[in-house]
Image (cartoon, rainbow, N blue to C red):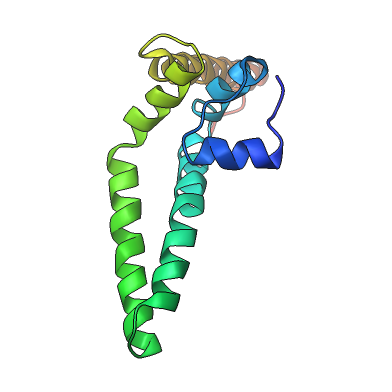
Length: 136
């Protein structure tokens, strides 16, 4: 899995398609355990230049301008969260995966993690029963 360089990642954050060699990384990016944090980081990258420009250009006292851009940031992050799943699916489609690939990959990983956690739980409690230990 090859990670994009910072310039390609910046273009990717703004919605550009990455080259074929980054295909697996894109799927990882939108399906790993912290995929929603990565999504919020991309949103912050998208909003920052616009909000900075508005702060510098809009007239008025600094506290009013700051309040306005904070309100804009809140709305931007709100809409980003509302459409987070759809945005992830669009990114994997651009990378060449079928519709629903991100959601099904996340679900499969959750199932694998659940099975592994259950196996470890059973193993720990089997050892305790074998020694006669009682939990609690």
